[in-house]
Length: 402
Image 1 (cartoon, rainbow, N blue to C red):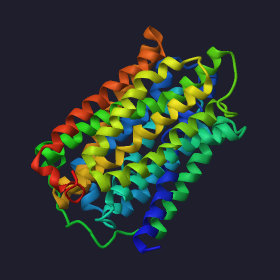
Image 2 (spheres, rainbow, N blue to C red):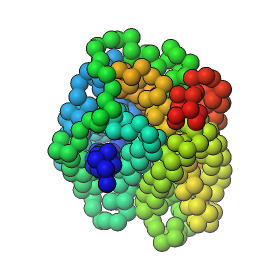
Image 3 (tube, helix red, strand yellow):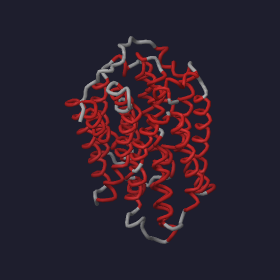
Image 4 (cartoon, helix red, strand yellow):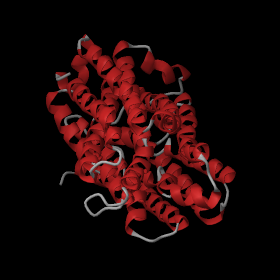
């Protein structure tokens, strides 16, 4: 194994641990709803708080050019430790919604220093095969996001134990980064503070269209991840019981989200071979179709629901890393970290709207139309990436493979 692949392995394991924090509260939401008497707004707010914190963190990071001015390794280490501490405090001491929202917000802020810097570090190790490398990294992020559901599905831990386990995984990830991660030989040029660079990703046509494609992808992604577990549980309830091939709803949710790691790997290989725009357009077309039809399987045969949700889980994330990879190829080299951070900031701001939208749509029109509303994002993303494909700037992508 080359040093670059060893670094990819270690950084992916660290990212897996760190991202266990993201949906830790969502995984225990049924228990919190019972214990704290939460309504739909309170339940959604626990997920929204993380997104809001991430937006504030990425905005501050982008405005300050932090991933480019500071060591991304140091930024990542301390950010993950902050998130582990905030999530651990929630597990140990909190018994009501208001302080939980504050701590989930802090957790989201910390994720801003755990996610974009990791992509920048990995880009310094790979020029050829960068799409696959960042795809594997995002695959680890995907599995990490699903881990709390696995803990919940396989153990009888109370909700505090599930949150505590996620914090321990994150702390272990921070130790891995500090002890074993370093920047590679393809380092980007040193940068000075420049406030204007936070918005440079929107000034040029190429990065702007890649960003618009990413926004379409993000409209769908986190709303699906946030609510698919609730849908799977409700589908069994409407049917009158049963399981998903022997899995309870939590186990099935882990499978549906974690199987996205396979999509990241396949998407990375396909993107490096056939082009960034080609892969993202195909993946978004399939995931949009899944969004449009999955909700109609409510109460139907569990294997059908699980199969369709799994295809959705694979394709909904298969393109994610490739939008980030495209930004590393289209942006000014000295400010790649800032561009990545701005992209993720705007994308996650949009997720707040789509996550919040699902519960009222479910109440008013049912799961079928609530999920179908998510299809509009990737459909518009296909249009944006199709326009990028026709531009001369697209020759910078994947060694000219558009």
